[in-house]
Length: 263
Image: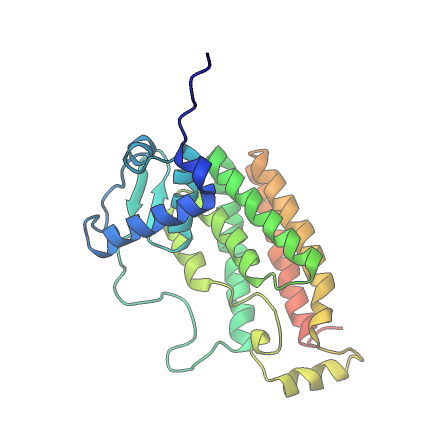
């Protein structure tokens, strides 16, 4: 006679739901300082045993906590509660100047060309299988958004942030978190100018600055992201560096073209 199989939590609730509960529990412990800044989180086996969940659920929860900026994973050392940096954001709008201007965004992209090219090379050398899976998931989400005509701003930013996470260097991650999605074009406001100003610039080029103008950008950006991912997957640091530099260099040119600064 076959023994009756014991139901696991995953049989009763989808893994993503379980991951959400685990994230909530650990977030409360961090906020209540049961887990203090700089303290190492329990290992995967310890969390699996404590919460009765699978390794997949634990890894999903860790990924979400990283994305929220609550923890940082250090290569070969484990996952730690992120210390709260004094002084606020390192990068953003000029002090007292309000929102970023279009010139600010161009300068930030120039910075990203250097920083993220180095990050991509390190990620190719240091990424874990789990981080590669997460990077693939971010890229697939970006592709889905492109396919259905939805906004890709959030998924674009998450893809680049995940590369920074995969370096194992928290300072790359910190810079990318501060930059956020500020240099990703989405509309007139995203270019740091009014809709009227953008329309005036676009009219001189015989084009319309509506969101469909971004469709070709998104498709090409997706192809460039695929090239970056493929180099990181192959652990080819030189190719990853070149692919990231090319992507951000092209992004700079596309941003200028969207604003009517280039023919």
